[in-house]
Each structure stands twice: as C-alpha cells, then as structure tokens.
Image (cartoon, rainbow over all chains, first blue to last red; front, side, top):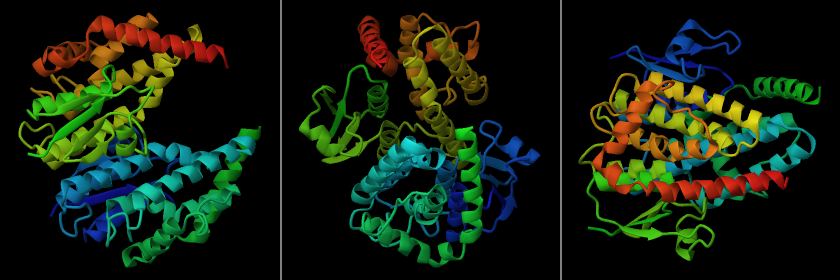
Length: 222
Length: 224
C-alpha cells in the first residue's frame, strides 16, 4: 500500500478534519507536525500555491485544501463511507460543507476584532450558527444522519474549537439556551470515540489561543 | 425522467456555468428568469439560506450554489464527464476550482474599486492571481481540462467574457496576450466552444449591464 503522510499542526481544526477522516477509514499514515513560523521544505514544495497545512501526501503526490483532501480520502478509501450514497443527499452534504468554508472568515472575525467591530462580528457569527442549526442540522442526530459524516467533520471546529476561541476572545457564542440542537450535536460529536480520542489538549489550546488573542489585540490597538 | 428547472439571471456568470454544464450533458431543462430586485416566492423557498440564483430544481428538489450544482450535474448525468476519472487528477481540478473561490474577494475588490490608486492596487493584485492561474493551473494545456473543457474551465469561464467586459468598463488591460499569453489564448479557445459561443449573452447587452452595475457601485461609494 502506498505511503500516506499528513502535514499538520496540533492546534488546527483543518488539520484535525483530515486526521479524523483518515482514522475513521482506518488508514495508516505518518503525521508530520509543522512549525508555521518555520515551514519545512516539504510543505513549501507540496503546497507552493498556499504554503498552508493541512497537506496530504499519498504515494508521494501532494493534495492541499482540507475540503479537497476530504473528498479525495472518501474516494480512495470507500470503507466506512462519510458521504451519503444518494446523489441529492450528497449534494446537500457538500452544500453545508461549502457554507462553512464560505462563512469561515465571518466566524473568525470575532477573534480578530476589538470593541464595536467585535460586537458586530459576534452578532453575525451567532446569526450564522442559527442558520447552520436550523437549516443544516435540523432535527438530525448528526449532520450525516445517524452517524457522523464529512459535514460533521467539517463543522468539528464548532464543537471543539469555537468554545476555546470565544473564551480567549472574551465573548460568548455557542450555548445550550440559544442553540439547543447545535449544542446537543457538539456534545454528541465530542463523545464519538474516534473523535474523543483525537482532540488537542483543551488547556494547551486555551493557552495557545489566549496568547494569539493577546498578540492580535496588541497589534490592533497599537 | 424527472423535470429539471433552472432559476437564473441572464447576466450572471454563475447562472451561465450551470447552463453550460446542462447543455454539455444534453439535459433538457426549463429556464426561469429571476428578477433579482423582486425575487420570486419560489426562489426564496428553494434557497432560503442564500436567497440567490442559480438554483437547479430536479424532480422538485432544489440545489443552490453554482459549484455545488455543477458537482450534482456531473454525478447525476455522468456521460460527457466534466471531471477527471483519476481521483488525484479530480482532486487537482477541485483544488483549482477552490482557488478561484478563495480569490473571489480580490476580484470583488477590483469590481468595487474607485479612484486611481485604489483601482491600480486592486488590478495589480488581480493580475497576480491570473498569473498563478495561467502558470500553475493552465500551464501549456489548451483548456484546464486538457483537450476539452471541464468543470475548471467552466468555473473560470467568466474570465473569458464577463471579466473582459469589466476591463473595458474600467479601462484596464490585464488579460492581454502581452501579459498573459496562454490564458488569453485559452479565453479565445473557450469562447469558440460551440456550447459557450451559443449561450453567452450578447456582448453589447452585457457591457451595458456591467456599466450600470459599476455606476451604482461608484454612486454608493461616493455616498458613504
């Protein structure tokens, strides 16, 4: 079998998407931790266009962009399918993955902004969470239905990163009262054994993002 | 066969993308022209999340977002394939389609630019994007899809006509044989593909539309 390598970073939700998909498919891979302040030759060679992680290298051939990597993994390793069989349902799954990608900058804005701008960004982020909860998740147990799928993996950052980012930025975003269905999904998602066993340390994450936030605020107010 | 309907808007390149894919696959469909200043009840029902066109409705089931629609069309009507069959090549095609999406804000900046320096900077940034597309995505191929067009060509199709019209309105020259020889040649070849040639809107009509859009943008900027 051809060698599989994943270039990632420990605090990145995008990195974890790929990791989760590989583990759910039972694919053996070698993980390479990248230092984003000192990117490896390998990373720069494998992703010259964006110079970002994650990058999957399969049999020496690199693939960048987590959403693209997820589709590739689904096709190469069809066991434990992570997309519905029905073409229409597949399309809906992809629609929601894309929605998350398109809206990500808006979501992330609350972390990068201060004062009035942060208030506005937080409000916008909450509106997006509402759309995802009502239209994307609805009454389903997971975005993928009875079991987690690529859409759940793609929104994993809501379950596992959003709380830490919000705390570090001093805002409140996802709570059970405002988003009962989404919060319930997040709790369920984190209990899925393969997810639970593959999450960054929450204390380490909080420290990391608190430091990032301090740096951002310092440069924003200087 | 289940009925296929497309809700579109005549000058929208996103609308055109779907038309091209349907025509290449030989799929019969009913076209519904939407008035974006007065969106139909049906459109709002079909696309409550974005409230935008294009929306494809197949057997009563709606699909929104042009790139998502393209993937659906490719899977539902697999003849005349528009994506490579090799998974790695398919991933590369999707990578370049995503690249276009990521650089959307740079294009929008150019569309919304006002005043000399603002426009100059926006044009410079967009040129850099076009250079990457030419060098790394197209290379020496006739089309992004090789000998025939595929979803990547369809995704970048607006560069060949819509963007060329915008250049005229803004009095800029970016996509030129002198600056982007291969991409310029691709644009020419793309417009000669029968399905494309037959479906893009009339040049003068589209130019007038883009001029109106620019006028509105500039007026809004001045009012700020």
